[in-house]
Image (cartoon, rainbow, N blue to C red; front, top):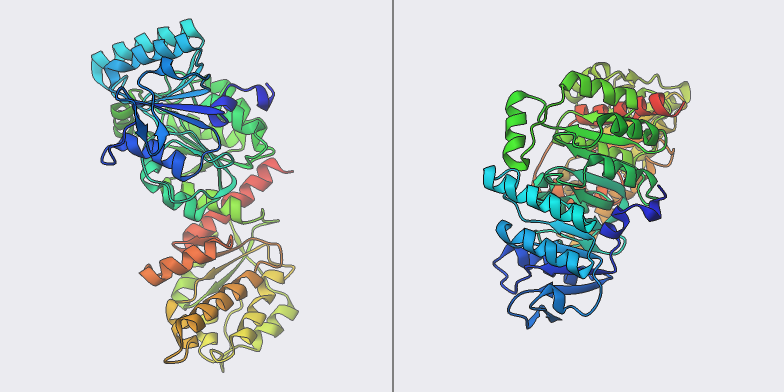
Length: 479
């Protein structure tokens, strides 16, 4: 199916959206749905629906769906569960074919909820309607500034990653996602009453704005064989990162409690199928977002030869352990690189990989331009495929700023530091940082660094794991 003809196209690119259950009460979650569309300047037409009519956020509000004089591409339903079937019938009468049901309390809500969901299924079949959810949020499309969310979104950051979630666990961290990643689209399938993971992979596979696909799955609802075939096909062109939750018995029961579906897949079989399909499986949520960041910010490595730049011998040992654990080899630096590094050596010899930049910096803190010029030789070395480096501590910025200097001077030194880090990327090879501290100043600095598309991980092990996954993807899919 051509991308422009896929039914999800109207979900992500509606010319008009009706918000059924809109409210002008800022203390209610439904208020945020309309607020986001207004604040982010969604490019389509917005039609709030509330029995009281009037205006909400300066937009004319209609008492009934039928009162809207124009056609509606997408209806977003946020009313109590028992009212949803009636609203769906109204949508069918108005010719609305695409619906998002935010409301919960259906298949995850006991016998009464399951009966309501069964009624909804019959209604959409008779009216040729497609439903996202129920018990869901989204879609999000940064191209046209469409964002269906309960959280007030500060700003959208456009990029090439498209996410598909089966749960709203991402929703409280949606502003973190936009501040650390460039996102194309987000789809939350919720209970998967109609739209499921197979529809998502089909759409993202042919979506020209999607370069990386990241999927969270608790249970497969579509045709499993077709899903893995599709993953195998798209993985040859786009990385597919999958976080499979509910792989234990307890986790499966927990998944059923909020989506109404047991994650019945055998974990070993699922893992083997993913490997054969060329997908990258994330072990947990942290790895899921680490991988998304690595694939977006870094080019694929040409091999597994890794150089490590650390600030202490202990960190170097842990990074070396991680290399062996995750199938990476320590790069052997060439003679020319060694000569450049020896210019910043302390008064004694030290190993070249992992390279202890901390002890070298003690002797060259007064001229960091020389220091970074020597370090830049590491990623430029022909024997190095990728480089990771420990983030220099925030105290470095303070030591570079004379006492009594203005805030502008301190900001200028920070920009210079980031410029030096960017110079480590000029080789065109993967370059990543890790941060061993977590103070507020470091978090601000990390945000500024990642805005320049340099990934920062919480440990050397997480950085190595992400780069190793990228190398395995290259070996499996890009031969």
